[in-house]
Image (cartoon, rainbow, N blue to C red):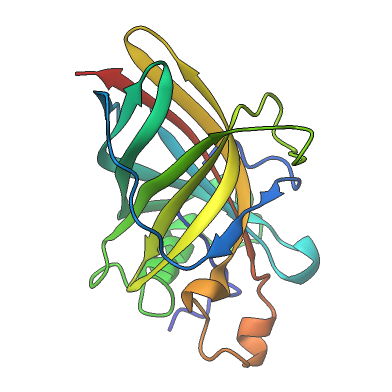
Length: 223
């Protein structure tokens, strides 16, 4: 076990990690995938960014970094997003060196710790997956969002390791003639997916905040 770093956990996912304010994603049981009706748009993996941010209790000692999307697509019908899915390659997980300020500690060491069986066990579970289950219009009179310009509420099944749960979060979606862009930033509870360091009630696990911030900027191009 790597003892160089305090234990930190991260998740899939996106957008800049500079702020602490993000919407809390509603979490429920796994749902049926949305029908992918309409035109198909392939996710541009070079223009799509997935970022994460994690801290100790009370927001202390934040760590942040990125993960790459390996493939995916979304569907659009009558100018509206209808469905889609994408895979996140957890073997590409990296920690931003700017978040590692302690003398003698390296971002690569934390990368290895997070990829190990202590957390994501990427040798066994190399891929996280998100599958859209519903897309509805965002109504500011019924829900409040910290995301500027939110246009939609997106629900989808998020799979991490061997656990799948449904999450719902606000997003800003723009649909053009030849491409689709979407951005979001939200918080999930890592323990809902059974992601704990050592054991659930251990002091080491208690020291890590359960809340993980995920942000993404996604671009997809019409096939």
